[in-house]
Amino acid sequence: MVAKGLHSHHPDAIAARSGAAGRVAAESPAEATTSKPLEGAASRAALADPQVSFLHTQSQLPEISSDETASVASSDGGSQHGIDSDSLRALFASSMSQLYKSEVPLYGDLLDIVADVNGDMMIQHPSLVSDDEISRLNVERHGAVRVGTPAELAFLSRIFRVLGMRSVGYYDLWADAGLPIHSTAFRPIGSTELMKNPFRIFCSLLRIELIGDLETRQLAERLLASRRIASPRCVELLEKLEASIKPGEADNGDDILRVPHFLAVPREDALEFIEECLQIFKWHSHTNVSKADYELLKTAHPLVADIVSFRGPHINHLTPRTLDIDEVQREMGRRGIDAKEIVEGPPPRINPIYLRQTSFHALSEQVSFSNPFDSSARVSGHHTARFGEIEQRGQALTGKGADLYDEVMRAVHRSKFDLERDQARKASSEEYMAILRREFDNRFTDDADEIRRQGLGFFRYRIVGDARTMSPRVSSGLDEEGNNVLESLIRSGNVVAEPIVFEDFLPASAAGIFQSNLKGPSSPASSTASSDARKAATKSESEEAKKRLEAAVGTPLLDPFELYSKQEVGSLEAVAKAAGLGAIVDLF
Image 1 (tube, rainbow, N blue to C red):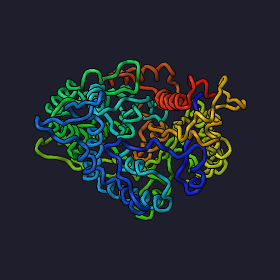
Image 2 (cartoon, rainbow, N blue to C red):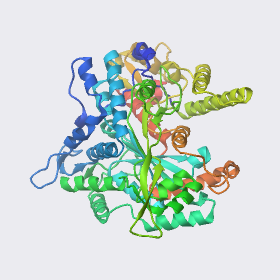
Image 3 (tube, rainbow, N blue to C red):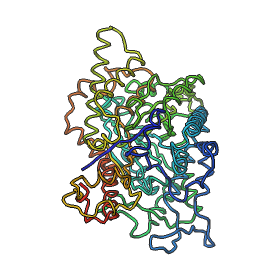
């Protein structure tokens, strides 16, 4: 049995939060970053500020010991000298946030809005999130970068692995949206690591073979072959950290939820490593190309120009998490921020699912190009790519739930197409949202218990009482009265089912965000392969592309459904044990 479901921070959802499905509890951070108990809704709301994360996570790094290394607890109860990769990831995330805020001041405004909205939600609904969940809200949710070559992706993969992040999922944005890239998400995968710091990077690799024009493709290949995204010192420090991973802490091949935890390096080396890594993602207004070459690359596709024309993979966007994305969307409009017209993903729900995202539109930034006639002079111009995004996360769906979600979204698109055909005009954002709400209301239950019973969403189960008194005799998953044991335990309040948070991405939403921030359509005559060729691409071709991306990453791309299933099964095993049962099967 694989189940799932989650609830929303929609005001109507508050009354439903005491139901069997419970509140999303997978959001608590590790003990090292857990807030002290707070008094009063206003005090708790004051902590809902993403901007506090930088100094906070710096302080979480272990103290320097006498031999200039950090001392951390080991799994056997002793002490080891090294740096916790979770703390290192937290520092990396907060440092990335500070860097991006310095480069894109409007991102700071976005953090202010998110802090205000989250604070207001917690004042109005004090039971909405726990103190632990507030701490997780303060950590940046995800960033996005784009690389040009498999070698660049391989290097970033090594960095992220040291930070306790694994590659999860495959996103073919060429098949989904005609974008000449494919992607994976680097993120922590174990429940404990996610609670400590859930930072993730959506990393896209240019599919250079999709550039149709030979001259443009050769130009891109030449430019990418000549650049080095990391300094020699960064490479040196990375190799040092990789060599320092404690024996026995690497993956054992059987449990995909195990990752390296301790790095036996001095604290000063770890801090320098983070600083060197930041240089990779720093914005450089000086391009590596002439204005003419830039325009040629842009004609192929704006993403090609963004990936190829600069020194390295600058941050494309950073995304904080909000408790009410619709209010954030409205507040951006009130503050005069140029936001997307619609929120990507499912509609507002009492029990939210998957992921909802919005953004302010990409900025037009001044850049300079090389001058082919005078190497000492530069040519001024503009580039548009970087933007600010916000997300609201819901429940991870099972395969069955994901299929239903896709079916509903296809119905949404058909209804939108029919409306536009009949009206001979583009549907307004209000009309689209009305269609979205209607189709989900008709096709996808918004009842948490039904989501669980129908196996549409993943849940984490936990004991809240003495479950052994509820099931003295069990046979084939039935209690002595012939009722399903798990259902009986849930109804009695001895077991709660908490939706597992969706930690990944939706290809359609990612494509929608990217496309809304690309100025001007690409030319079908001279750019990436035509839409007809894209639609004719076979499943085997997509699988081959996935294999190439996986080879560049250097490790298997983990299946997100398998990760969520392992979390759910692990929680059921704990419930069965606490209830004095022999195995999970005795619960059903």
